[in-house]
Length: 116
Length: 112
Image 1 (cartoon, rainbow over the protein chains, first blue to last red):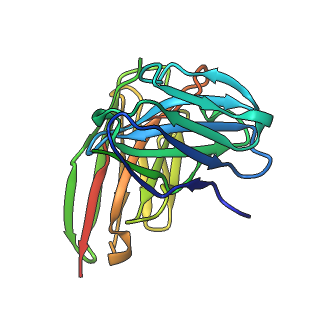
Image 2: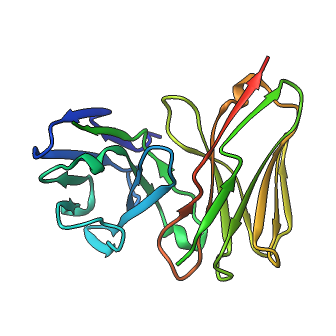
């Protein structure tokens, strides 16, 4: 089966610009997660969708980050305006059931965002 | 909230030797502990997991142990091979949550 796909694989933008990351989960997976790894640190949770609804967005750093999942299929994560500290690798993951109950999460390859 | 610590951050072993990566967690309610392997340029992939009602789990050359009392779990790789070279992440989650709490990762290099 097709895995989780993320676009773009790499993005370099200037501070103050806007960037939109996209994630296509595995077909049929209602649960979609966004995570971020800042250089050398842990992979940190950003938010969780169940279908089109935000189940938990407690990890979103601030209101410059906006995630959407219209129609409950693909998701986008927009950063506007981007700051230097937003640089990192953004991962998307999907699962059939919420991962809190011990369900495997399937990850995309990530988008490496560099803000200069 | 949960805090997962992972050690070491880098590890080099000779091919054929064993590698051990250790993680600790803080929330006693955590009950599921997956390990993900990320090869260079690829996606993180689940390699093994363990639930809190089990003390050890093996899958060929890979094993994971869990000590609930001490709140730590470890990944053991025996007879390491160059293709084991990757970054390994431990994680913890619990029934009442939605997310994984990850460690900071261990970069394992297996020297041929």
